[in-house]
Length: 192
Image 1 (cartoon, rainbow, N blue to C red):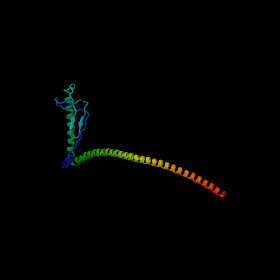
Image 2: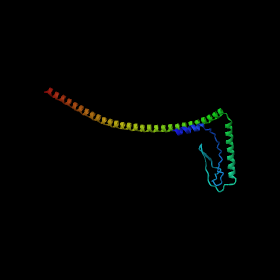
Image 3: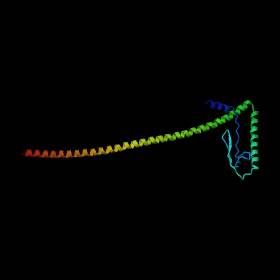
Image 4: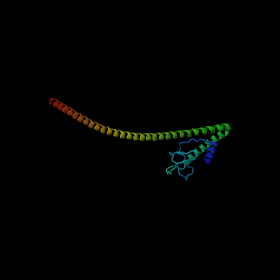
C-alpha cells in the first residue's frame, strides 16, 4: 500500500507531456534489427513503446532507416520545443498546466470507472433477471402443483357429490315407496 501511495505521489509530481501518435510505422534505425512494415502501427501503453516488426527482404534498407531517423529527430525536436515552452512558464502556469493534465487523466479514469460500473450494473441486472426468472419458474411450478391438487380434489368432491345424490335419490325413492306402502296398509286397515 505504501508503494502504491509513493507511486501515486511520484506520478502527481511528474510533468506529463502527451506525445501525438502518428499512424506511420517506426522501425529501429539499427539495420541488424527487424524492419517494420509501413502498414504496422505503433503500440503505446502509456509508459513504454513497442514496435511490431517483421523481417521483410523486399524492403529497401538503404532509404527506410533514414526516413525513420528523420521522423524520430522531428519528434525529438517537437518534444524539446514542448519542454522549452514548459520551462519558460512561470511556476503558477506550470502548476496550472500540470493540473489540467491531471484533470484530463482523472476524467479519463472516471470515464473508465463509469463504464466499468455500467458493465457491473448490466451484469447485476442480468443476474437479478436470472434470479427472478428462476424464482418465477419455482412459483409457476408451485402454482401448477396447487392447481393439479385442486383439480383432483374437485374431481373427488364431484364424485362424492354424485354418490351422495344417488344416495339421496335412492333414499327418496325408498321413502316414497314406504309412504305408498303405508298408505295402502292404512286403506286396508280402514276397509277392515
